[in-house]
Length: 219
Image 1 (cartoon, rainbow, N blue to C red):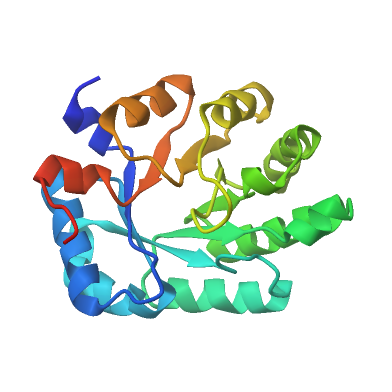
Image 2 (image 1 turned 135 degrees about the vertical axis):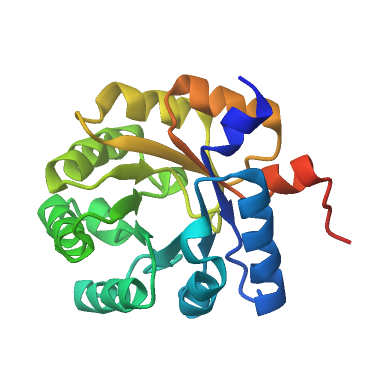
């Protein structure tokens, strides 16, 4: 798989707490130059970023990020606000506590609520695999499928671990028809990116791949 093909699957990401507009602008420029799938940025920059990129790049943002324990009403408002500001794609974090309490109906209803708000816009569901058991991961594949989301996503990148090959393999074996996989968190090489795609991921959330291609490294 060549470099250009890998880049088509990348959500070029900057979600650090101290991200500035100048850094967001550079992320947008890098994404456009490399032909990534989207830029994934904080909600507060969505309007400015969309005005900057126009139709040249899809803008993705995060909801309930990174902990997922906002109420459904708050997540619903966040989603409506992000879409009104021009977001093309939404990455939501599930309520991990509900999973641990086996309140899967509540998790599913929350996903359905946000998907209704998104309509034909893409909704990705972050399940934070590093905090789940294997059984919980399998169950979340079913919940995400039944709720009508577009993607199941491994990680926020802000917890104890990021994407793992084994989790993408597990998702590929258990998601239903029409659900795609996003691997995110800690993807730092082209070899790893290619391997995640081979295992079944459709999107890769990473801040490093574009920088590697453009030979941009933090000071």
